[in-house]
Image (cartoon, rainbow, N blue to C red):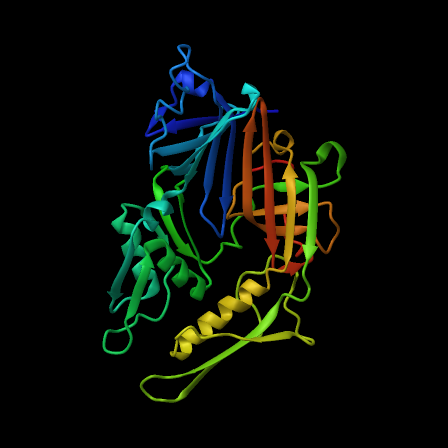
Length: 371
């Protein structure tokens, strides 16, 4: 089986050998709904002359220093997993020197978008145009899906109050989109994403459960919250016509991850959605649909991957196939979260998956290898 290795750089340069020699653990968490995180844990030891503490007093990890984590499988090309900026340094001291530790925490580039709160108007722009413009202010490449409508200045102007990333995530939520920044898998360039969850993406491999030598999962726990999915409706008054505007959603619009949607047609749960100041009928419908689509993600799986058996690196914000858990729960899942952990000579991947349907569609191609 191929070896899996990692590299950490600081401001574009490899960590100094003396610093790297103190590194005990590397943890990287990717998450579809939150900022990605990198945590480095070092042994904390005194300098030979007792004048201070190695790494800590050398001020190696300064505020917003850029850390990059890359992972390589076998002799393959290393892939940038996370670009992150230092936000916290914690020193822990114990009576037993072996318990001394230094922890460095860094967040993905969205932390740069959270440094300044702003109040500004975005006239004559759709939400997707606003996202492209804001990402461009930080020099990010963009992967943005169009939204409707484009608000005109003589009717409604979108006003930002808060940091750029807070504002964009608000816009993303009302459109049923995800908003995050991650390295491009080919170029490594920081790329701003503003688009629906890509449930229709090609699966990045197969997670096999309880299949002896063919198993790639150490453990898996699946929960189906059958009371979660809901039909939605909302209403508001149009500011110009004074007419009532309504929206109602009875099915999901996201690509189905299985044969049968979790949103039932018989005795469904129905919720009234706060319109959040939206008055246009199209925007109300989009928002109500986003709420219904989120509610339908009622199946969640948490587990730990056998990285060596999987022979690859599972990534968040993509799909993966699961087999070995029966015809209702096997099939395609969306990877919401992955926790990569390097410690000593081991590499572990904890994960959280989600799904908006049950059953196998019959078109899945379960394989032994990751992609």
